Amino acid sequence: MFNIGLGPISWSSKKQPTISLSSTEAEYKELCCATCEAIWLRRIVEDVGETQQAPTVIRCDNQSTIKLANNPIYHARTKHIETQHHFVREKLQSKEIDLSYCNTNETVADIFTKPLGKVRIIFASHKTFPIKERINFHIP
Image (tube, rainbow, N blue to C red; front, side, top):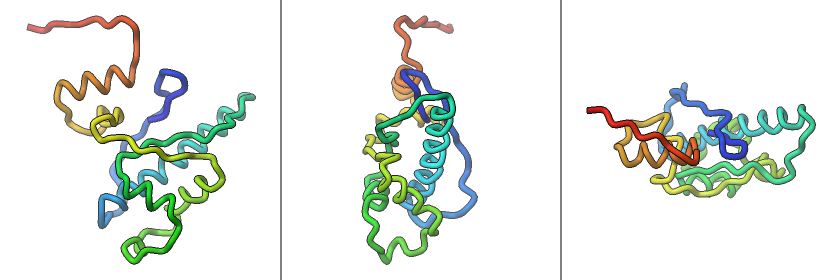
């Protein structure tokens, strides 16, 4: 999910077309999709006459994925990851994106992709759609 200011402007959720052999690989593939979306959004901002000097920060809840993206050394465990997904490394090196760790319990995009309990739904909705006053509905 991408925000400008306090509001979300873009998000995506879809089933991956290929099978991943590990959670790191699955998250890395999603990171590649998020990187493509970030680059596209940066270009839209440029088209309307603004430039973004700082890298776009992409938050990821998998530390192994962040380490894989930051470390371009070949690993035997990652040899099956397709070359196209290493696009993330290129954008990290060009400083168009930056990765930061986000604890799983603080991942607000989960509201769109997972069944959550009441506490997590309230937390994610307040983080996703921050407004000063909320109307509380009570349904008997």
